[in-house]
Image 1 (cartoon, rainbow, N blue to C red):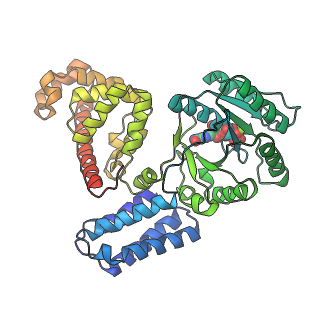
Image 2: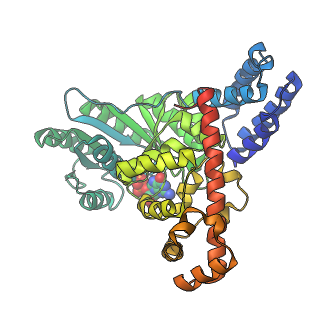
Image 3: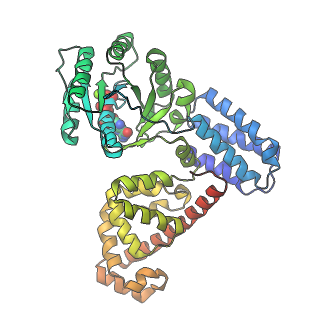
Length: 440
Ligand code: GDP
Ligand code: MG
């Protein structure tokens, strides 16, 4: 993927004490290829390379003490800028309810994202949303939203499929006001392609309810098509932001990098899965870090903070930062982490995780957690604190005590060791990041 290619390229220059103009040019050629391969818009790539070149070949970089690091810093800053720089906030109307219109093509994820966004508004911002079912065309679309509403316990406003979407939207907003809901999310119909009827209807709804936000939902898997769709919708509706869905899938990432500069509107949220908690605010800087393989510790910690109790999360962060970490912590974290979702996803967010050989060995199937717990519980206190003392005879005893094969004990010890190594690496990167002011 994009991350691997960029990391490979940047690795070559990272430690260099002296960087020549030719080095930078050579590197930029590879960065350019990596971006094009990731399906980033051609013109966006061209401008990006031009900007990085101008800065990287400048005197401040070539004459600095760590030119390799400086080049990487420039690349990271420009990637961040490409995605809009700062994180965008969601609007709050001073005359509630805040009205959000969800628009996009069929299958992009509008209805699902409407549910997820309501969920996030309640969970993270403590808001009270109402959902409005204004897609009267797709069979069962109203039912789909009503089911989500029931599942998440949100009120859903609908008038069936015989009333015009404009009327439904209008009455829905009035109802939300009456019920003192502070957000109202209007789910609209999509088409397979952009057409005049669709745009006409959306423009009418816009005129009728004067939304504070118009979120365009686009499918990241569609690559450059997503970017073109964003441009058309913005030209015709003047959207306020983009929600990029299905970033959990096998996307090459090009859409995330191109949308802002082509459609001139920020990505506000990203969808990372089908579940109702799989929506995250979009942070350009963190995304840039992720692309460059510096990991995404902040998102990881944020996730821990909403899903896991806060004191424990803070402790988790500290242990990770200082890389002092025993099997007892591991056990505690397994139970915390179980609440946060699939372990693979969590591990992937750790810096450098994708560079570690045998990352697959490191991933732990959720079903195996019980076995892991049994093994750890069969260790003595001293063994948990100083795993290096666990020799062959101790391994045998632990295997027996836990009822697990000895190979499994060996594997766990090895995984634990690698995890610690990874954390050390991460702590190192954070230190470096702090020094150059690269992390917030
Ligand atoms: P709509 O036609 O725009 O309303 O699209 P839907 O909300 O019905 O979603 C279409 C499909 O995309 C459904 O199967 C969703 O579960 C799926 N989907 C939506 N968002 C995501 C996401 O972020 N990740 C994944 N993997 N699937 C998603
Ligand atoms: Mg829908």
